[in-house]
Image 1 (cartoon, rainbow, N blue to C red):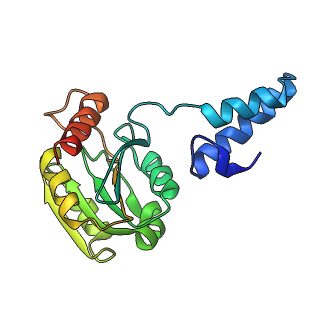
Image 2 (tube, rainbow, N blue to C red; image 1 turned 90 degrees about the vertical axis):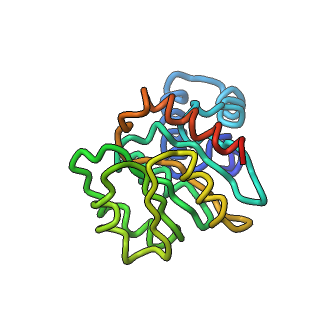
Image 3 (spheres, rainbow, N blue to C red; image 1 turned 120 degrees about the vertical axis):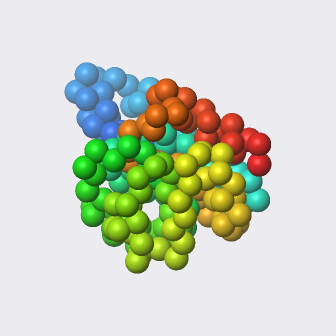
Amino acid sequence: MSISSFALQGNFNVKNAMASNTLSDLMRVRKETIRNCMADFENEEHKLENVLTINGSQYINDSKANNVNASYYALDSVENTTIWIAGGIDEANDYDILLPLVNEKVSAIICLGENNDKLIETFGNVVDFMIETTCIRDAVKIAYKLSREGETVLFSPAGQCEKQEDSYIDRGNRFKEAVRQL
């Protein structure tokens, strides 16, 4: 089965699919059943969730990414130039692991939250645009203005929810609503 036929794309999902396939093989699950599952699997809401394509830019909700490692896999899975909406409560995050991906793929970072000093310090000299905002609606509007056809707007916070958000679900729903209102 070709990787391109997997319902979920990205290196992280390919690794998970390979592990699932190995286990399924050991359990003697039919290959056709495995292929059908890999091709039809639906992604979890708020985890690399495709929201909309607007003016040729894809908006992705990865609100569940509340740590740097989760955002690493999100950035790694995006194929094209990316506007990254990041931020939240910073619990001693070390963003250095993201430097190669940001340098390669990210054209702008929209820092969301009240304390973005570490994000700015780590990536300020790496991307063309770094903009701070405190609300998701404004972050989405800024991303819309910066985005070009073929780019991805990725909401992958790499931090815990801010005070105004109840959970990653609330945060992700706010993002999706803001995108739908563009």
